Amino acid sequence: MPRNLPLKALRAFECTARHLSIRDAAEELHVTPAAVSQQIRALEETLGVPLFHRLGRGLALTSVGTNALPWLEDGFNSLREGMNQIQKQDDGETLNVWMAPSFASKWLIPQLTSFTDRYPDINLRISASVDWVDKQDTNAGFAEEQFKRLGIDIAIRFGNGHSTGCEVEKLMNVSVAPLCSPDLPNANGHELTTPEDLIHYTLLHDDSPYEGRPDWPGWLQANDAPLVDGHKGLRFNQGAMTLQAAAEGQGVALGLDKLAANDIANNRLIAPLPNSYPVESAYYVFTRRGENKVPAISLFRDWLISCAMSAHRS
Image (tube, rainbow, N blue to C red; front, side):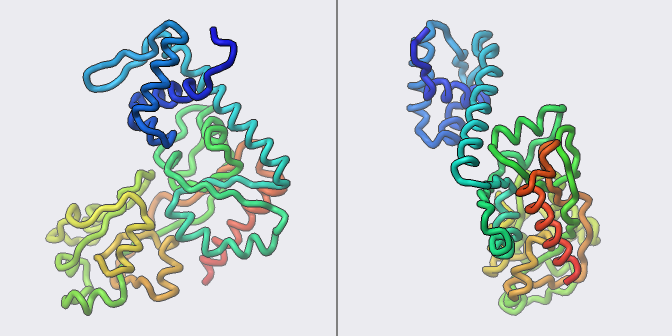
């Protein structure tokens, strides 16, 4: 056993074992696949045991690797939490907030000044990623694991609000409607007053992996437009890019009203059709149990809900 822990090599193994992919691990670690492979082979040589079976089309953990993985995952989660605690002490009162990228850019950021002006002593650290977007709470410890893994204090998620390990409060309901640039109908040369008119337009699709995502086929079926092919068009992996493409006149997006509100208010987007409908999923605020009364968390959560209520009234 080496006297000094080979943390870089252990991190490469832990990440590769989670993904069962050297390429995906390299992407997460921001290094090359060759660097990840080198670290893993060096670790196996140091320990004297294989950690992976190298298969023709991928990887599989050996029994040694399978037994080691949970311990290493817990260890790296603890290290992240330790760093988070150090940063909290070093920075003063720091609040780490997680959400999907589209929610951050389209809804939160335009309103952040009102929070920072009101609470200048709270340092916000915003993490926008898809790390938790498409993962469901499958057991009592799942949410706690996500909070530790991401190093966050509060999360804003879109979905059904179910969690077995968090305090959850609904932030706001949403509805969905076709959205486009105000100039698009004139530039296209065809009217856009009924769902059937969409046959003349490029459909813009949001393929981001979140629960309850509305899609064109479902909307067109609900609005009795069978001649429009809901599968054709341009596809994006983030809602913000879909809305940006719509604002640039690339086509018609099926967007959530709350994410498009700022663009609509500034006449970058319009809802040309009266056909909108509520979505079963909603935005929720997640906090770890026992922490929803922590002053910084409570203030930020209450501010979020106040902003959502103000937007609903306007």
